[in-house]
Image 1: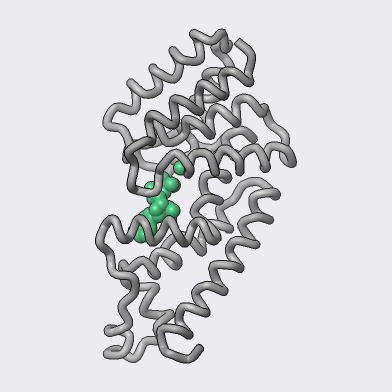
Image 2: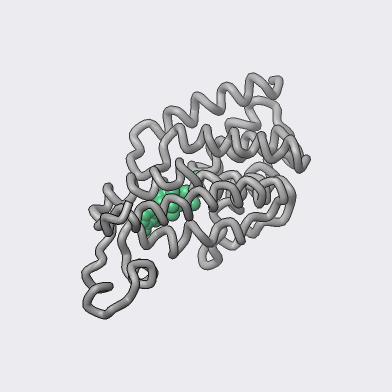
Length: 216
Ligand code: ADP
Ligand code: NI
């Protein structure tokens, strides 16, 4: 089967899998990661088909979204085999999918190839910028986290910004994770896009603190 048809079928599978998600891993997250990955591939190279399929299937093997990662991998292998994709290409797709969520610990599949790097960068880019801010608030709302809480800041005479480095509010997530991501990108193309999205988030935070204190 030709690559275009396989990609279209893969999108349909992704749509079904992510249909009921409310944790920020919905179908449109996957489509944005897919589009990010295509953008990065156009500049960085790497095998386009491997990158596209790995991007589309990347969250299906995430332990947060499935309780049987191995069954998911087997199903994806079977899907690709049935459409005539070669064993070596399948292995590279699976590797890229698993490397996306490498955090040490249980997942020992590290980023090793340009395809792995692009898919991981593409996923991380979706946590940044205007979309990343929206996802943070969706996630935090879902978990019933506070937006922001400066009370302790006032008691301990910390600045709001210092305080937000130490709590677990949604605003704290910017310091805990989002503002660190640009330093974790592998490819130059992703570093550039991350830099722009990073600046946007810094502007956002500046405005946020000004509004919070009634200064702007
Ligand atoms: P990934 O997409 O890499 O699997 P996560 O599942 O950790 O990442 O997060 C999904 C989305 O929710 C991301 O946009 C992330 O920034 C956001 N998020 C994760 N943890 C938190 C948190 N503690 N507070 C607010 N947002 C979070
Ligand atoms: Ni993802």
